[in-house]
Structures are given as C-alpha cells and as structure tokens.
Image (cartoon, rainbow, N blue to C red; front, top):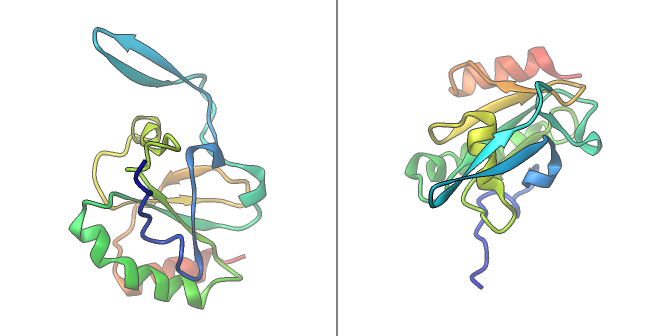
Length: 145
C-alpha cells in the first residue's frame, strides 16, 4: 500500500488530524452502487477532548490542490509563532485509509482549501474570514486564550 502524503504532519506547529479525532456519529448508507456518509443526530461536530481548551483553526486540504500546496509555508510560519497559544491543525481529505474523506459530507466541505475554527469546547464551525496574513493574525490575536 502506498504511503499517505500529508502536507503538515512533519512541520512544526501543525498536527494532522484524522476522522477519529472528531466526535461525530455517522452511518454509511448504501444507495445503488455507492455509499453515502450520513451524520446521525443533531449534535454539533466537535474535536476529541484531547484537543479542547483553546480556540484554533483547522485546515482541510487535498494533496492535488495547487492552492493548498502554495499555502503550506504561509500556515507553518503562522503556526510556529503561535505554537503554544493558538493551535492550528490540518486534515488531509485525501487520506482514505483513515476515512478522512468522510469529513467532506459531514462538515459540508465543497472546496479546497477549506478552513474551520473551533472554540475552547472543541465545537467546529466554518471560519468566515479572508485568509490574508493580516486577517488571520487579527483573528488569532482576538481569539487567543
């Protein structure tokens, strides 16, 4: 089996997450010749308790996305400056071995890169800001615990 190529796992300050790091209940439903991932219940999707306690950002990316590839240095530079005060995580949505692709329908991700924020309780929501350096640094400075 081919090794999974992650953009961020080796870089300081950004850890790679997998589906198992999210508290979400789901079910695979077979329709014709394919399966659909369906979220169960109305609970908000959260990070596992080992990741809670601080506000942070999650980067959802595809290894085939040129924009995602061009943002690696941008995000690693930011993460290295805030490594202890503002966590930044990444999810390789092409990692089917760990079922990360299930997160696409569960979180309604339709494009790459896709950014989400999480609060101190681990609740995940879309990050609705521009991803310019100024806007990201402003967001981090206003949401650092």
